Image (tube, rainbow, N blue to C red; front, top):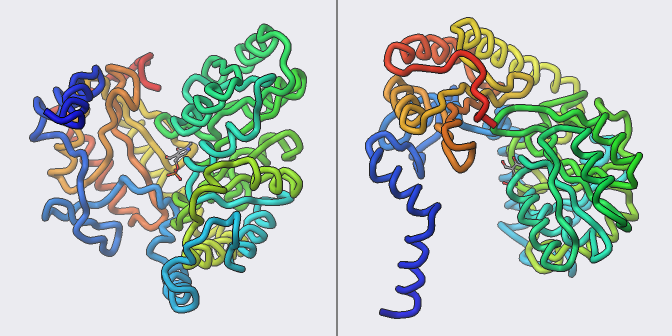
Length: 415
Ligand SMILES: Cc1ncc(COP(=O)(O)O)c(C=O)c1O
């Protein structure tokens, strides 16, 4: 047996892998994981395993992935730049990278923006770069995995890492006040919690930060382009300014492009370029995608945005009202991610599979992505879903309830 074989055996014996393979084996016929799409067509129809279904599992909330202007920008970008310029930005950038950052900053109403190849790489690069041994990081207990991974690197470098209770400003205040002496504190949260659609009390959390010498770091990935005035996310409307905030956003979800960014002051941007290892030691977003980001910025900054977001809100309304009127326990609804609580893991997988058979793809989310026995059906509504498709999905839930027992009152486990 080679050392690599031995490692494979060890990994197969870890608790998480055993748990997941138990589910994969036991429910192999209903486990819709690791699917690959054969094609994407009109009206959000996709082909999975040779079966055509309406896709309610896309974060491309505004439907801009299918917009001809965005596709043209990519095509023209390839003509202009080729597929990739192939250099870390620590050495050189294409002009369109600078332009995309300027356009993003203008749209957001923030001084400067630094683009990373993904939100994960922004979090894993910037968080350890921002703090040192005399500093602390305080995380919402449910914050995104990539924030937690960034905090682990910071911890290995000597920073203290603490947690506060989900979305609770009082808990944050207690943690900060009992942390002992620190030089700086970085409080990191999500702007929207994507498994539940919960938006945190940003104004109150920022006040606790200001009162306790802490900076608020908000990963607003799921809100970028779809929440708030002009789609600028959760922060500005709630807090009124970015004075004490580092704003993280996504270019891969509502933007339908690729990448992540941090919005900050010009001075902080220069520092982040030198302090984020993922920025220095990794490659950039490919130039054609940067051209597409510029195009999406223009769309979001124009009057057309209200039309697109209007279509998204209309669809969201049909879905949420329709599901709630059936007595289902629906989480979220203020954002395009809507989760219907099922609870039991097998029932959650089965429910997703039945909907698939009926022609709808939604994501069956089970532990460890949500707490044990807190399974949900996660539905992503897009602006370019036809209203009739959303109505059909709502009706499919009526049928589904004949086969699956849904909880109707508070199920504490669902995150
Ligand atoms: C809050 C949050 N941060 C980061 C990410 C990861 O983003 P990316 O795919 O750009 O790495 C996600 C993805 O869903 C997210 O919800």
